[in-house]
Length: 249
Ligand code: PEP
Image 1 (spheres, rainbow, N blue to C red):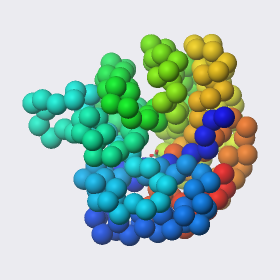
Image 2 (tube, rainbow, N blue to C red; image 1 turned 30 degrees about the vertical axis):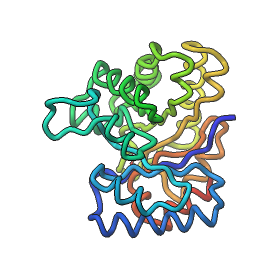
Image 3 (cartoon, helix red, strand yellow; image 1 turned 90 degrees about the vertical axis):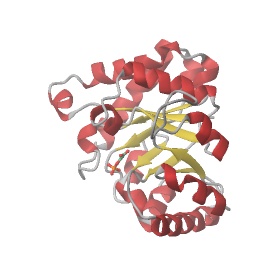
Image 4 (cartoon, rainbow, N blue to C red; image 1 turned 45 degrees about the horizontal axis):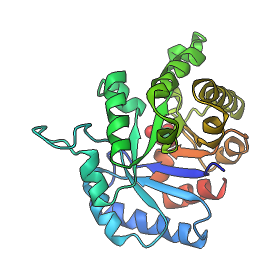
C-alpha cells in the first residue's frame, strides 16, 4: 500500500527561533493525529540538527538540497552522506527552483538521485511543466521526459522514490491546478511508471501534488484517486494552515 504523505518545503524562510516554534506547533498537531499520516518537513539545512534534537513526534526531516559527492573540495556544499549521518531521512531532487534558478540539468539530477539512494535517503523527485509548456499543450511530453529520467533506477531503488507533480505556473502563484488537471497528470504519471517499470512500481509509488496547495483546495485535490498527498510551500509556513492540509488527506 502506498503511503499518504504531506511534506512542507520551508525553502529559505524563517529565522532559527521561528523555525523551532513552527516545528513544535506542527509536531503538536501531528501528535494529536497519532501519526496517522506521514508528515515531512524540509527546513533550511542549517536548522536540520536543531529540529532533529527537539523532535518528539513522528515527523521526518529532509534536506532541500545537497551535493552528489560524499565529500571533497566543494566549498559551501553539504553532502547526502553528511545529511544522512545527521539523521535526515529524506531529500528533495528536481524542484523547479533548483532546475530553473540553479540550472540543474538531467545529469545533475541523476547524480543527486544516485547519491541520495546510495546514502539511504528517501527522495521526493519533483517534476512540473512551465506555463508556456502548459499553454502550448506540451505538458504530457514534458512530464513524460522528466519521469523518464528515473528509468535507470532499479525496482528496489524505486521503493525509495516519491514523486511530486508541481506545475511551475502554480508554485507560489496562488494559481492551483484544478483537481481535474492534477488528476489527469497524476493518472498519466502512474501509467508512465507502469510502462517504464511495472504495475507493482506504479501502484506503490506515492504521487504528491504541489503548487499553491491550501486548506481551501487540499480536500478536492486529495480526493483524486492518484493523488497521495502534497508537497506544500507557502502554506507549510503556518501551522494552522499546514494542519488543515494534513487533516484534508
Ligand atoms: C513548492 O515550492 O514546492 C510549492 C509547492 O510551493 P507553494 O505551495 O508555495 O506553491
